[in-house]
Length: 259
Ligand SMILES: Nc1ncnc2c1ncn2[C@@H]1O[C@H](COP(=O)(O)OP(=O)(O)O)[C@@H](O)[C@H]1O
Ligand SMILES: [Mg+2]
Image (cartoon, rainbow, N blue to C red; front, side, top):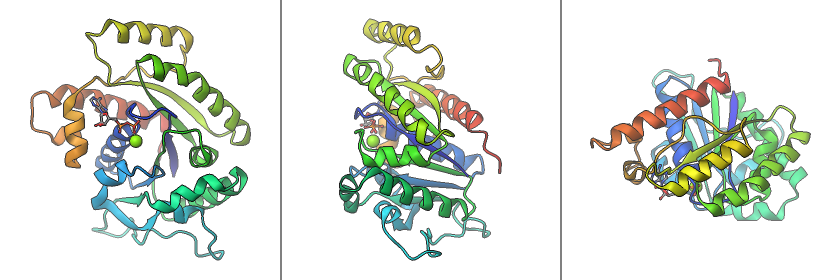
């Protein structure tokens, strides 16, 4: 199982949109997918609610007797079983910030191991917009991290801190690879966006993912309707679909998932 975290301490930059679309795309590629929602806002849990498992996210950080580690209650290898499951956000996640990072990190790593043993191919983790214990614990257990960013000053201002945080956590988790930043909600007609994109490409030439996603209301429609954008029957959804599919193909390839 390969584990990807979607992270950026700024809110509203497209993290959940990216995560949900990767999950739908990977599912269609035939992967067995587990999604973990570590954000108490529960946006991914809302869109993916029909995939809910018997587990909630805070349980991945609690003490359980050895050998009975988190069971999603779904055998994804069984014929006719759903191939995607959601470990939804819950109020218990609020207590995470009271835990020490080494403790939260160790528990979450064990939980990821337990999910790996349940034959999932990909584990996708959504995070809250903060540099808190939850995000750090996810980064300590993951193989990959992806950061959607908006091409606005406040978003760009925070990215340096995000890059530093990832570099710091890689010392404790050397297998962690930063797949890069995905420009999201890009308005092609906005000169400020074009300028910010240029600045970012100059500052982080290795870290800019070439497949960005435009500002497209069909994406917001899709998230609200709990479907991927390619299920939205509007002409305007076509461009969004092409962009999201290109991003998913890029991430899929970088994750080197073997089934
Ligand atoms: N490419 C896009 N175009 C237009 N709206 C978008 C796009 N991506 C996300 N949104 C909308 O912007 C808001 C924030 O996106 P979201 O994915 O929830 O960000 P985050 O998880 O980083 O807070 C949501 O209301 C969502 O529907
Ligand atoms: Mg979100």
